[in-house]
Length: 257
Image (cartoon, rainbow, N blue to C red; front, top):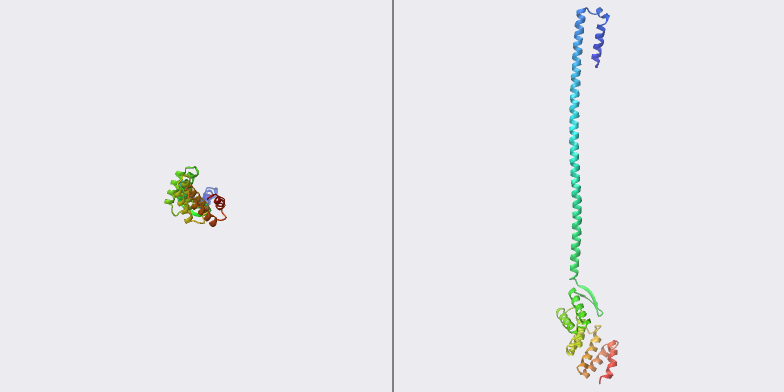
């Protein structure tokens, strides 16, 4: 109850007491009491109206707050769902990127592997080191494999084809040596001599050069050209005196007459 209402209530109580006749006569007292009651009722109604309006405002504010909270919660849930979607996308993108990187690595490794099949490689043959194409190495090794199996006719064809195809290869001096040996085995002595001499012309300091000279002498012996064989052995001893082939030549010379 407000302060005004409390004062009016006290005044009514005073008017209703036995001392009221001392202040007012009956009519005046009744009018005063009615007036006060009307004022009290008006104040009460005004207070109730204000309370009702205040409760309405509070209810509206609470409803608005609940709507705002609900909207905020909905927005949060929406943002959370969007974030989960984006996280999922990021994870998928990360997996896709990892897979692409793996595929790229496999492609690069595969490409490098294929390129290495065509890139020159460093080889050492008969003490000589040089760069060779992959195809050169494969064909030379294949021809040498044929020779080692004892297929001398096949080795003759393989080494002759190699020399024709790779005329400037570092393998060529060695190829001439094995070609001459294959021809010696098939009794193609004149052709063998020609190929041994090709080795000596191209690489007189070749590791196989002393053997090539000795092989020329052997071919000349088979051709019954003893004089030429003796001359070849003497040249071998002079050109390569410290070689094993020269030692063999010294042993053979006395037997050639």
